[in-house]
Length: 215
Image (cartoon, rainbow, N blue to C red; front, top):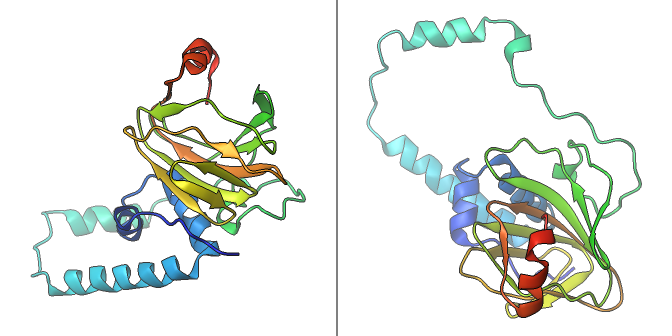
């Protein structure tokens, strides 16, 4: 597997610092399972972060902080946030390990040759995580984003102005990015997507079907 496209340095730094939401974190973690160069870069970022923390001067604890911490640690385990339910047994050879702890919904038709499958990652606000599957040769409408879209290609490939994105590649798209992905010929394309905000269709056909888009 040749990986050409990676998360931005800012995205990897946020992942290393634990600042990404869980959905984006799962997509980045899925990329890391396939990309040794990003794993090496992540270790360097973590080393730098650890060194910076070690150099910080000690900060006094707030009054009562120790007592509150000990009370929380001694509380019943039922109060802790439960782990997501295990994914039902299923033959999905392309499914990355970080995704296997989450339940997957059924495939849902959203357009000609295009299907969506919900991933049960806990999210806040308008954030959501899903699998997207498109048939070979499918041309998605030209669009831009009102938020952030992080995509990890799990199988197949798609092409847009940013290049060709094959299995293992990562696409960081923000609001100002306008593109029209086309699925490469040969095999269906399956992607893991974490998205905030919505999709805004920009072409004449896209504006016509905008009311029916539910990604």
